[in-house]
Length: 562
Image (tube, one colour):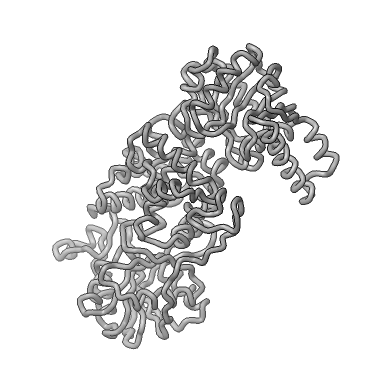
């Protein structure tokens, strides 16, 4: 069987197939490109030509290089043209019957030593291989769109695949300048199994009315640091493709979190497939355009507070103070040693952080210290005095003052305000991984809308991007991120892929700034596990229960990436 791959055949010349052609011709391979008709073949040539023209315009190629690259590719519509290539890659639509038919025909055309590869993103490579006379030479070679840009190639093996062939295809991917990840044949492989489940959860969050589409996307983009929000990404991928992969994942695993959300199914049935049709979660200028033309979902405009009190003395309080001062707001800070009282405040932010405690059942000291444990606070490590000074300052606030607290302390810090019939919201400051600051403002059932609008307006006056949502465990950012990280740990625990492979798949294939395990190590296994437990306790959704492996790492204080 061929081990040095110099000539390549590509079947299917849509955006993905044409991108694969470009990858190979730019790497010096000759390519025979085939589609179902002469017109489709010429369209594929047009995709390649347009891409190279853009690179010439940007100064990345000169005219001579462009012509040399184009000369390596031939285009046609007959499979017989594959008779003498070393490798064939199919990139036709995700329909098993279409792929097996093509591979069956190739059996009678290609040389015995030719490698057959499928670019499927979710279908069983084993099923495709089993439909051929020589399943040992069939392998998965999954590129990511746009293929010339994204570095990941998932090399998918089967129980029947020649092991030497697997090594040769991996080496080829490296020679192409890609980052290959070699894994077995499982629904969704690595990247799609993690990504599409994350997108499905995000769509369900939007479907419930929990948060606006812009806020949901910014939670991922600004709060997590991902290159784009989940709704924007779903539109880019194609909602029909997202649904198809959801179907494959759900059929293979029966995990409710992988099932296609009802809203997604409705949009696909209505023909709203995202950018490709010009209408998905967003309305676009035209089919194929990435320019959004519809207005953002409506928000209520509020008036900023005139006098802000900041109660707290930790890093979060300091960061809030810095943001307010930079925004030109009038703010007074009150800590445990304060002699004055915030008697004239219109809006008060309670920003006191929990501290780690080995003796508390939860592992963290908040403001739930009872009278018995308060007497023994020196031994336990709990600082019950925090309860006193915060409580005193909250009670000293004017009756008309709006109280906003970190979400972890809403039961304590805002409880007094509710008892006094004051409007109350719960708020959480979240420092984004890349793009600045973002604040999640959570609305509870007793929250006055005017109070919520005032908090949002005051924060935005300080130059802070706000996200408004209903009060639920994890709010928006953690509700997107933590289950996604948990899925990665479960994949590792199953033995399917390594830490390095999973992190590589998500950075090189999905453009993440860092992989899931780098995120866990950055946040801390305890924070990830405890956040998941809060969400699990609220919903009892099995997928939210922390992976046992995550808790093992938490227990010994180990890092995944060290």
